[in-house]
Image 1 (cartoon, rainbow, N blue to C red):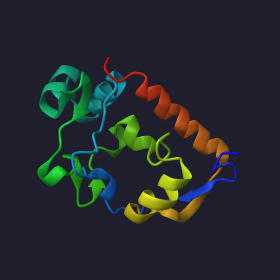
Image 2 (image 1 turned 45 degrees about the vertical axis):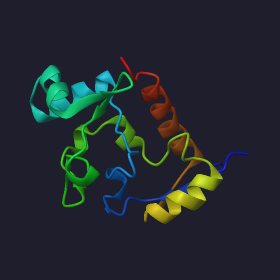
Image 3 (image 1 turned 90 degrees about the vertical axis):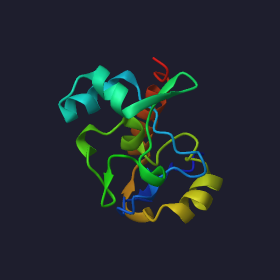
Length: 142
């Protein structure tokens, strides 16, 4: 039985904590579609967006960090490119590596104030987010 079969409560509390790298972890990986979407949102060409805002990590495009490991698009703990944000940000916290009881009930609960609050996401809603994230991960490095 999956830990989310009865649903999980989560609602973003706007802390901005998920938008800050921790000890070198916290890459925001970018698919080609993510880069196109963000470039379009910013009104620039994809190649320009990629050159200005991205770099490669082991052959995978990722967003450059801003000051002190904060996402460069985080302003007043809010995403300044919310409608154009990458898939990885759209699907948080419903990632394969997070949807494990030890992670969800441990590290995530300690670091993310939205866990256990707000709406209950149904198993079906979680599965959709999970599938979108897995599909996105298969496109890294393209």
